[in-house]
Each structure stands twice: as C-alpha cells, then as structure tokens.
Amino acid sequence: MCIRTFVKINLMHFSDLGLSPALLTAIQRANYDTPYPIQVEAIPAVLQRKDILGLAPTGSGKTAAYILPILQHLLQQEAPRDRQVPVLVLVPTRELAIQVAEVTENFSRFLPRRIKSLAIFGGVSINPQMMKLGGVEVLIATPGRLIDLVGRNSVGISRIHTLVIDEADKLLQMGFREEMDHLLELTPKKKQTLLFSATQDQELASLIQQLLKDPVEIQVAPTDFTPDAILQEAYRVSPETKGPFLRQLIQSGDWKQILVFASSIRTADNMVVKLNKNGIQAVAFHGDKSQGARTEALAKFKSGKTRVLVATDLAARGIDIQGLPLVINYELPRSPKDYIHRIGRTGRAGATGHAISLITPEEQHHFKVIQKKMGKWVTLVPEEAFGKPSDSTGLSEQSEA
Ligand code: AMP
Image 1: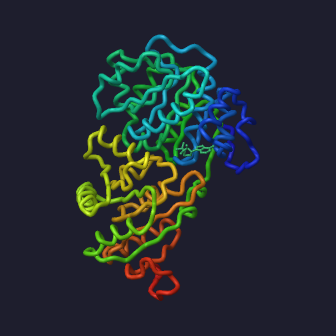
Image 2: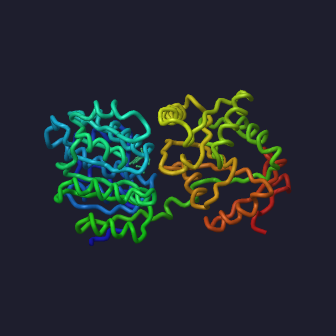
C-alpha cells in the first residue's frame, strides 16, 4: 500500500493536478480558489484510476476531491442511454446524499456536457426517484433504497466503473454491512474504488481488505479539525432562565444563521414554539419530521430564509452549512464526540467558528467530561456577565477547578 500522509501544500493550484480546462472552468465558476490538501493528494490519483483510501472527516473537502476527477472521466465518454449507471456513490444518510448531489450539480452545470446525477434515499416515495433514473451518470444512494430499486430493475449497477464509499465508518456503524455486501456482489470485479472514512477500526479494515486494490492512502490529520478554529464560550444558567437567556442571546447579535442543538425531539419542538411566540423565526430539524420537511427546513436555513434551526444530533454529523457563524448548545449531547461534531458545523473550510453552550448546574460535571475528552477547557461564565467585557466583571470562573 502506498501511504501518503497529509502535508499542507499551499503553493498548489488546481491547474497543477491534471484536470482538464473544462473542469478548471467549472472549479473557477464554483468559486474554489485553491485546492484543499486532500484534493491535492486525491485528484491526480483518482485521475490515474487508482483506488483510494481517504481518511478524512467531512469538512476536509473530500467530496470535490473525488467528484472532480470522476466528472473528468465521465466527460471522456458518452452518457448512458439506459439505466446502467457508470458511477455509484454509496452514502449512509439522506442528508449526505443530497449534499453530494448538490456538489456534483454545482460543478456539472458549468461543464460542456451536463452530467446527470441523482440522489436516491429512503423515507420518501420511490416513484419519483424511479422516473428520474434514465441516463443517470452519478448515482448517489443510501444502501436500502438502492437495493429496492435494483430489485425492481429500475437501475443497474453491474457496469459501474467507479464506486465511491463515502463515510464508510458511518455506513458500518449504522449496520449496513449486509446491504453493502449484497450490492457489492452486483458490481463488476474490475472497477475503481474510492473509500472515505473519518475513523478506522477492525470492521473498516476488513472492508478495506475486501474492496481496495493497492490503494493510495491519504490521511487528513484530524488535528486540522480540532476545535481550535472555533471560539467556544459557556454560560452558567439556571433551568428557569435557560429559555429567556437563549432568546436574549439570539437577539443580541446579528448572526445570519444560528444552529441550536437540543438533546430531544420534544425540547426541540417546544423551543421552536417558544421562539416563534417571541418573534424569533425558527424551524425544527429532527428524526420525527418527514424527509420532505427536513429537506425544506435545511434548504430554508441554508439560503438564510430561516435564521434559527433547532436540531437534534441528527444534524450534528455530515451536514454542511457554508459559513455557519454560530452553534448554540441549548443542552449538551451525551457523548463528547457528538459535542465535537456539533460545534464542528461552524468554523469549517478555514472560517472562524463560534459555539456557545448553556450549562445548568446539573450539566456542569458532564461539561467537564466533554472538555477533558476534547482536550480543551472553556471558561464558564455566569449568565449575569453576558454582554459585559469579561475582564470587567470579575465573574468568570474556570470550569476546571
Ligand atoms: P466537504 O468536506 O466535501 O463536505 O467540503 C466542505 C466544504 O468545503 C464545502 O462547503 C465545500 O464547498 C468547501 N470546499 C471544498 N473544497 C474547497 C476549495 N478548494 N475551496 C473552497 N471551498 C471548498
């Protein structure tokens, strides 16, 4: 296995990576200036039809790292006239499917020939997806729905030349191994496989062994995505003042968008009702909402039509909201990992982020556990100090005594 460890290469340009003028124009039109490190490593290797093992979290620019060279390959051949797709991207969630399709479409619309892509996922009616499958060149799919559509002969994956497995660790964690094995059986032996994962464990190692042939390994150091780029603040509030404090906080700044996390669907729904009652436009995003409602809520939030999105941890992973200025933890997640995922929605792609947590006395101990796991301490400030310069109050206290 050829291992390429992540090195920051600032001097590289997209034009150094072997991409054709058509792709370079699309990149320019999409306003990408300089390639991210994973793109510097992956694009030439994918263009050379090598298998890839990309150890990279969301936010590293991995989607463009695989989709750009794939689009270049597709431009060199004719669009299929049947329902046999040439490129399959397997993803764990509907949200990621939609996101990858958006990135693909974003580049594709500037190409000399429009490359047709489609995201298919469960939880919504199958018929509209079935009707759109003709001539698709990049199919982005969650495993269950794909098995369904293949079973109905609505789409074929027996002639794919490129397979991407995105967030492979999450696919395994979500118990999709059997479905994946079933689907992989249906794909040709000879194909290029690109596998991306944020974490590595034994199960992933066995999948890698099964799938990848002499892959180029690219590691994007997780340290690049530690919370260092994110300004973290914490306020000590009482359970009674938490709600009013949140509203005061939201109204105190001119943040374009605010993502507020709650730990349960009920709290999220209640919070939305309260915020709306108080004249703060907010929408809920959680697993109890229909797929349609979730997609709409996310689209409105992304476009800036809704200022506050109140979400459960469903939104903590994978969702990419460009330039999100503020994350508020109304309640803490149980797992420290989820805390990092939550605050990682801000401060992405080189931007500075901002995360504020509201901590009741009961949550104080758990917050310490989270900070210990994160390896970074956040000063806990009494709510009375809000809005005052921190050094003039004399009120701030270290949460680590
Ligand atoms: P990803 O890791 O693929 O989810 O990408 C994270 C974010 O970075 C997305 O908002 C991309 O649009 C953005 N992005 C990826 N590559 C570049 C680049 N070279 N220049 C600017 N933005 C980028």
